Length: 264
Length: 221
Image 1 (cartoon, chains in turn purple, cyan):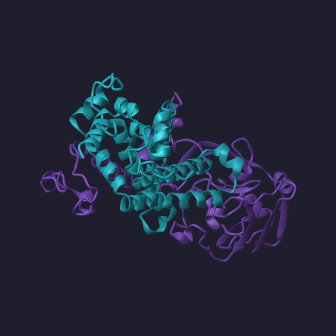
Image 2 (cartoon, chains in turn brown, orange):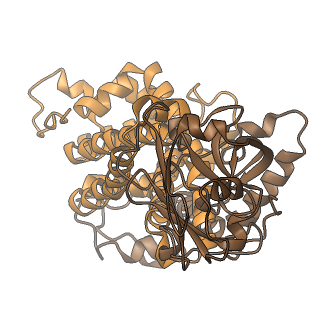
Image 3 (cartoon, rainbow over the protein chains, first blue to last red):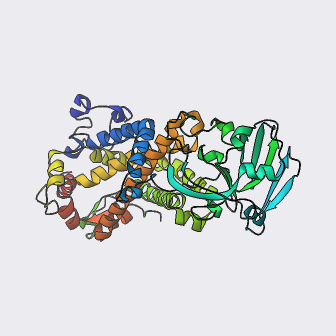
């Protein structure tokens, strides 16, 4: 038996993985028949890596295509596919705020004539707005036809006598980290809700309950969860994700380099 | 569970041992079981992150995600260290890499368990499983890094990486279940991965060419 069989260097298939191998074998035996043949394993590995890289680059379009297909699927079978249906849960902090509806408080301050802290019941006592709209995440997933209810943001701003010329409204989360903001014009839209209910029930803890924002024409990161504070302010302050490079004006389909269908 | 030491030491005085073959070295078993633990942790934490009822049951999302990321980053370590350390693993990886003509027949045939077609140390299914394992480790590592540190890449890559990571995770789940099913059917195969040695009768039945070559090698010395 030879340490280096003739196939060792005559191997036309000698590629990537071979280069990394020591120049001679110290295992005491030459290459058995089993170590010859088509390098299918290497092709599978390199093929998977290639497809994976292709999927990273093109996956967004494919995902959009699948989601579009799923939207017109009467059988509902496509809802079993990953990433098609349903919310994904994202939280930026180690633990999420756990606040009962009884203990919940929303502080509205800044350029307002009557700063006020609203309880959950206070919010329910204000005029209620109901919307059914899609929820689109900037990472690609979309939930069709979500039912939302709560107080339209302009109604809440009017309730505290907000300065109608103030250029911005800032939002902060009870998680102590996440922030968001809207311009005055955006905040005056009637499809922006201080939501107490979504999916036909009170907003659950993982969806940002008891109270979250829902900015229907914009990507999900604008819809701050566990809403704890609203401040009418003189300028827009980029929020948590916006400081990490996402667009401040997060219109669905017209920002972040994305082309999703508008949600509002 | 740490693999037991190799039963093989070259002595033939134990007549019972003479009826067994060394299938997996201690290094190879370490690599296998460390990978098994890491993949298990990854699949469990992945379920806790992805399957909403489980996510709500367990909570502690940040901790779960950190465990997932750390286990994922550790995943290539046993493979790389094993590859550098263990000649037996390198040799078996070469065997897993190479497909013979009969491997293709084996995959296509309906009587692949009959012993009609010659099977070496690994059958064609095991070879594909081995290649898929190395492939998924690389793909999951690549996409996982993009997902966990998204700021260094184009934004659309994050969606693409999530897309690939999800689908490959499903495939990994299916393949791991298949691997456990096959192992569950064959206690002798499990013995091989636990102790390193398998009985000769089993090797002749399941991996005839390998059993013949090993016998030839030891007798022809």
